[in-house]
Image 1 (tube, rainbow, N blue to C red):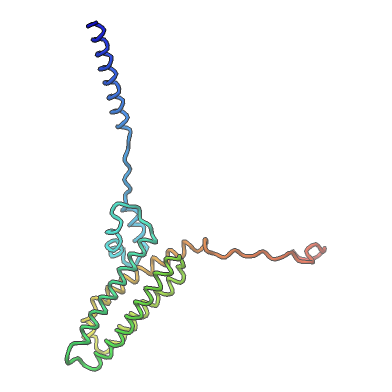
Image 2 (tube, rainbow, N blue to C red; image 1 turned 60 degrees about the vertical axis):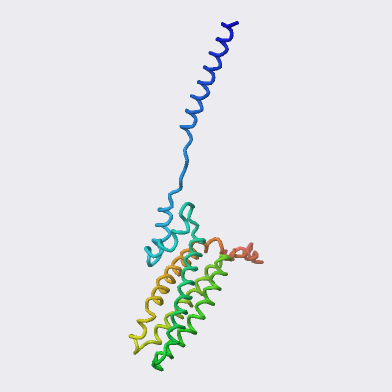
Length: 214
């Protein structure tokens, strides 16, 4: 009886050892795949006018995930929107300053109007991106750059005063330029998919007549 018990215990111990050994060996064959975001980010941002700014804008939103270009564009556009809102706050504060010159006030009024239209254009851009209408998105966002330029041009002759707005204005221009670059790239990559197929022409009544050009 004792001999039998010893055999059973030995067998159980041996089997357990073998199972543990196999489990350990199998665990060594398991590979956890981590997606390296950096190449995706570099490839995405190298197509923009300011790759460093692009990386700073996009990377915080893709710490551990695959970079989706359309989602990344959304973050770029959102960053531009925030910057436009900041600029509007600065413009509003400058307009409240006592004793500003008439020419300075006139320029600020123009900028206030232009930046209001920038917000509208960014909203329309976001709607177009959602629908993957990149041609429309590019058109709307080009208006953002035009409105920005109209604001800046209004300070001709009083460039010193423009320096009070320059930081926020230039930041918007840099972010906006990157957005336009990304939109243009997506438009080019999506164009073949969105082309309207040409309807084939009906056969000519004279197609089988001898001597008729094909």
